[in-house]
Image (tube, rainbow, N blue to C red; front, side, top):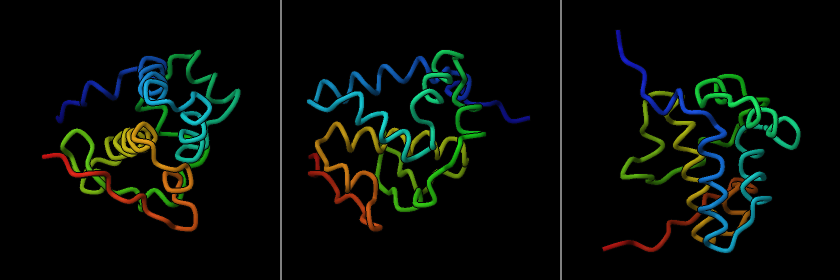
Length: 129
């Protein structure tokens, strides 16, 4: 039997403040973090607050989202050294998608680009050497 990754059992409530902190440290807002989460998963307003208050784990958070955005396939790139579009496990891929979107927000990309408006793909950031 394959062992589940420990991140799956982490509560969304434990990672949410880290997403907000990362964004705010770079001059972005909690409202923008919430907008990114709503775009990806459909969780917004009271529904988002409920999963935070209930300490819903990441596995349940992504197992039954109100509405996964059909444009998730447009999210491409590397997070923590892993190319998100190549992650085989659908749950881990969804977690990486959210990480990638929050990274783009913190890097100052425009919301239209982050949210793939009109099928736009966020341009790659500057290359690190």
